[in-house]
Length: 381
Image (cartoon, rainbow, N blue to C red; front, side, top):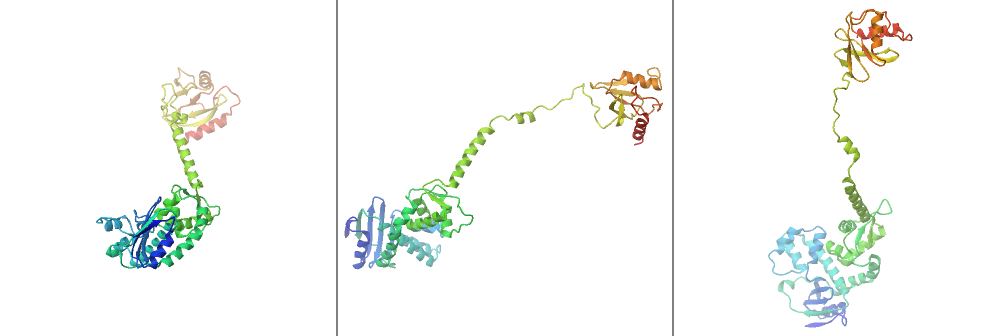
């Protein structure tokens, strides 16, 4: 058994020692941030995880849309303990839920990301145990030196990437870009869809399954394009907040009474007995036509029956007798009617009216010929 302190032996040094001696077994690491492991066979890395209590490869598969919850449930329902990433990948392939080549590619990416995360651990304890299950002893994957070389290149970029992206607990917010056309790759769109203005960098790394390096590398590109902000409220999130304020104002104001609505919803107008109901264009008396009577524009109609009726300005209809005893014929009758009916009153002359030549009223300015032609034209309709 080999164990020690990461402050005395860095992770790369421990891995080189195990590779040099062609060890087969599991290297366990524990720090304040979590527990990790590296499985080796004959001194070669075959599997690794920076979170031994989770299945990082499952998150990567979910993030890329290669499996769903149903597939994971199908292969994990009967398990008694958590499998390694390699074991899970093999089970998915055996059940036809994942392509073999795709599984190898994803497992390679996951192992590289895990070793990189472990190299960032500078404190804690490690212990190497040579005991491995038989199923964990097959198919060694990566040379330690090759893996360390690849992760070392990432370490050289890591400081600048962290400086550009900030704290892992900072929220990533989508913002409106300054330019009309912005080219975002498929990886960028995937991260934008997960961001939503609320999730942190570490949460995006977990949901996408791309690891801390891969997630931050994509974020750097998105920041350069100006489509996201980190650690501050972006324009999209501010817009959502403004809409929330607007909705609250609308709700509060909608509860207030609207005078216009009260007027529209008031009681319907009811007709009184005193109102004139003769405003229709066609009544029992017949159609009307305007004529000048007593110096005003009044209505002259052809009644169906004999007799003369009046409608005064106060809306009260009055009947004028047509018999010889009630009204003299000729000019006397016209004058009598004019004297009886006040100015502005509509006069309806009967069809049996005689004496076309008598005057219609005392006003000498009335042209009798024009009035008679109008009446004759109406009667001929």
